[in-house]
Image (tube, rainbow, N blue to C red):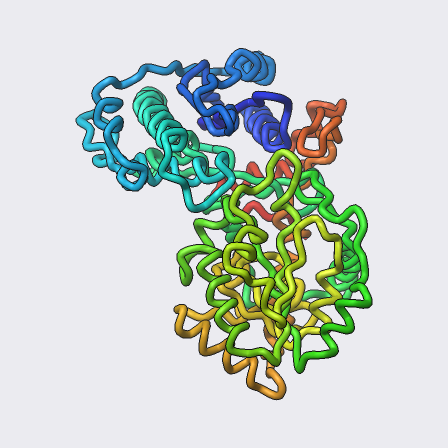
Length: 499
């Protein structure tokens, strides 16, 4: 097995680094040879090591490599270094940003399929580190894009050589959206080598492993699966905490305090025939490439919502920005509040904007709604559980099941919204609520693999520390999480916890 996570930790030990190394230990205990493909200043710039405001600043390789050496003590490590391709650099130097993002490298290297979609491979990571979807064609962005592409090409050559030398059974990477792991996964797929990726799960200190795209969260639920009384009880207990804002995601608690609707908003709602809450997402999040199937992006969807609001003055539209949009250290540079200001949306008498830092209860809004609009937010799943009609503008992890209304085109979205706004009562199929509960149960109690036996909180919620634990705790007979991971990687299993 080859394990690859490009950054072991430029600043500290992350949850995903913990998931990564612990899973590799579990495999090694099963006498499965594991090779760590590890960066030794192997990129001119990497995603997590980029200084956004000063893109030319070199990444913190010394700290990161030291972390890798510590984590992989005693392991089989294949280090890769950076060798700049001057010919490719010259080819990229004169290109505009749009040309860079669609650039494919017509190489002549044995073992690497041609052409290599370098622009496509680096785009998600570029959007993530620059905190925006619509990238600005300026020298700082072009510089970073070129360096990412040159680094991706170096990884392609180095990883291809490793594949030639080892002929691995499978490849395991973090996330799969950032260019280092995306490039290695692309190469593995081209050779028919199975690859697996992981991300944080919904439970605290839990991981999600999949053979698909982890940020799309593919879940296969058997048609015959029905929640038992006991399972319904577990789900209801979780939802009770969730509806009070008492939950974390990737170590982050988004709702330190959840407030009821204030008197002025309640009075304003009373002045309208109906209310439609509109829940947005973070535009640069790695889930967004999967969401943008009907609309080009979330802001194009919001433009459609704004047009509906102008045509329906009898309806109050409440736009709720995602709380993660203003998270300290990860603030979005392309925001819903910026969109509101640019479109003068708050000048409409029937539109209210709730900023990300406002801790108002979204669930109380849902209870008062005629129907709910989402792009691909998880709150759409929760609204469906509450019995609300949900109209989705983007593909979400749950839209593959009959849970929400998800039109196939912009025209269908507009038509469906118009129908909902004019209907006296919206009939929601009974299966929507049932499927929503089934999906959320699977997501929480079957796919979220617990690592709390091995990891604990650090000084920062996004980071972690090892607990003291016995080597035997990594054996599948002693750990449901390790059993699911080993079965998934070694036997093409489903990465689900047993009931």
